[in-house]
Image (cartoon, rainbow, N blue to C red; front, side):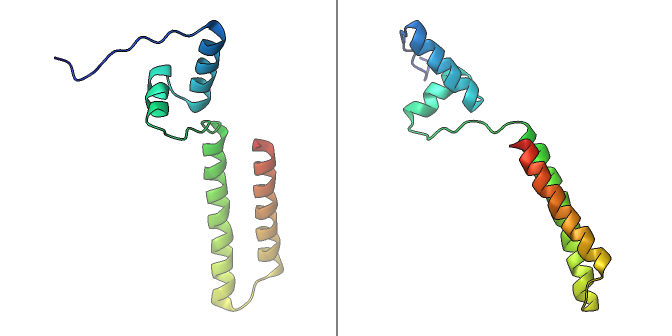
Length: 101
């Protein structure tokens, strides 16, 4: 005897389209979506693929800013060039965020 139970669910065209749209937004197929909903999981839309690339870029920029800050702290001062580089990196971060959103 199988541990799984099968149910039949009848939906009209509007309900089916809504379910399909919700599944696509969550990045799931319909059956896993329904299982999650039955369990009371608060489903959120899957973030766009660009978010992973944005997070990698932000991480790299953050590392560069940290390296500049570390060098400045080691010397007890920051050069104008280092400050300009850090400001440029922050502007680049802001641009990436705006482009992605």
